[in-house]
Image (cartoon, rainbow, N blue to C red; front, side, top):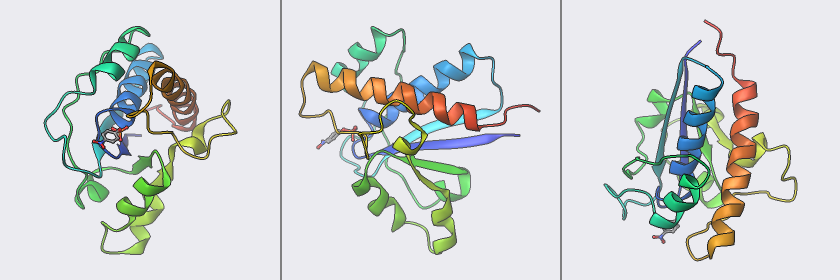
Length: 157
Ligand code: 4NP
């Protein structure tokens, strides 16, 4: 079965492109096929930009390359993707206003719902105004949740 997953945060330059890159790296390592992954932000201000250099550096140190160009989520994404995975409550609220019908909201998931090692976190914290440790914490949470999400997906053909 084909899975189409869209990770969403505010700026699409820190958390969601990192989740996208980690998910892609994990699925390649595990030889999983049929997973389409993308990311987007609720805010358009960084459109076209590469991820934040601090996040790219922290991810590169873990062997993960980030090449995504930021874009804003749009209503059409509810048709193109079958899971829309948000980082925090503010993302959830903004994303929920996009589709014309409430049934589509069944596609919206909170990222931390897939984590098994970070029970104290009810959201993925925004690292934008944080130091190095903030980025490392976010990557730890993202690696945890991406493993959990991948385990849920049946990628047999
Ligand atoms: P992200 O982080 O939502 O994880 O990409 C942020 C990026 C940019 C801003 C805030 C958070 N900003 O205010 O520009």
